[in-house]
Length: 386
Ligand SMILES: *Cc1c(COP(=O)(O)O)cnc(C)c1O
Image (cartoon, rainbow, N blue to C red; front, side, top):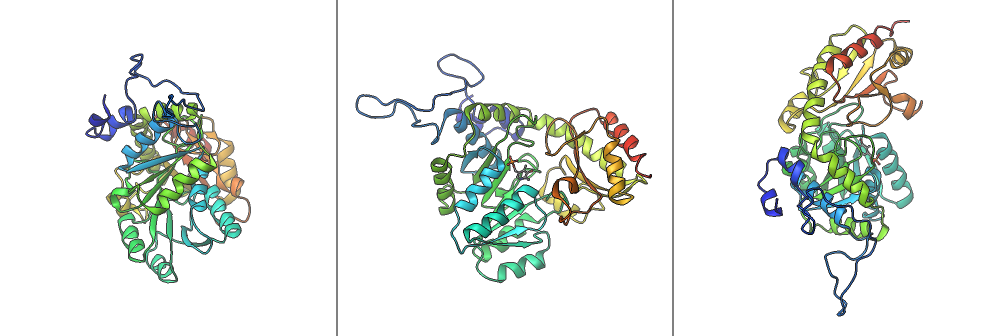
C-alpha cells in the first residue's frame, strides 16, 4: 500500500497499514528492523537516504511515528523510550517560570514526575480537578498558564474531562492543551479533533498491547507550534528514544489494536455491569455506566468507554486485600491495556500518603473469555468478608 492510499483508510484498517509499506528491495510485507546507528553519505557529502544518525531518526521509528500521527489525526509525531520519557520531554521544553495545570487524578508515576520536575526546574505545576469546569476556570484565571496537562479518563478514579470545552477555555486563556490519551487510545477518543494541541501516549499500554515493550509518543496538531519544535529538539538531542526493535514490536502490536480493543471493551462493559450489582462491591468507577458522573461527556467524546475500570471493595483495605489474594485468572500486576487481565490494589503502589481510596482496586480488562474473568472476580469477591 502506498502512503497516499493510507490517508483514506478507516481507523481499523489504518492500524494494519499506516506507516508500513512493502519493502521495495525484497518485497517483504513486514518492515525489516534497521539496527544501523549511522547512515552513509555520497562523494559530494549528501546523505544517501533520509537518515543521518540513529538518535535523530531511524526507519523503524519513523514508521511508528507516521502510524501514530495518522491514528491521532496529527501533523507530526515523536516517539520516546517510554511514556514517562515523553512527559519529561514536555517538561524540558518549558521554561523556568512557566505555569502549567495538571489534573488532580493522574497516572501516579507521571504525576510524581511532573511535581518533581516542577520543583527542580522552576516550572510552576498547579494541581486542579480538570473534570470540574468551575475549578478549572478559576485556575486558568489565576495567572498566565502555558499548558493544561490532562488525562481523561483519568486513572485510577476514571474522571472524565470535557475535552472540547477544556480546549476552548485553555485557548481563551492563551494556554495549550495536552491530553494523555493512553487509557482511551486513538480508536476510542481523538483529542486533536476536539481541539487539543498535543497528545501523549504510553505506547507501553494498549497500543503495543502485550506487556512486552516500553514506549511513549507525543503527537502534535500543528508541526509549526513552537513548543512542538522544542519537543522534537529534545527528542533528538537528549536521545530518550526507543530502539528500532522497540519500534518494530510496538508497530506490530498496533496492527491488532482494533480487534483487541473490541474484545477487551466488550468484556469490560459486561464485567462493569456485573460488578455494579455485586453485594461485595461498594462502587464501580467506569465511564460506560449510567451511574458514572462523566457518563454523558464520555458518551459524547469517546466511541466506547474503554477497557479500564476501578472498583471500591467493601470491608475497606482488608476487604480489598482479601479480594486480591483470591484472584486466579487476573494477574496481580501494575500496568494496563494489555491482552492479560490485570488487577492492582492501588494503595500497595501509591503508599499510605495517597489520596486514592484504600479499598480501590484497578482492573485492566484483557481479551480472555469473559466467563473466566467473571467467575474469577466472583470467587475473589466471595472472600471479601472476613
Ligand atoms: C503507563 C502510563 C504512563 C507512563 O508510561 P511509561 O511507559 O510507563 O513510562 C503515562 N500515562 C499513562 C496514562 C499511563 O498509563
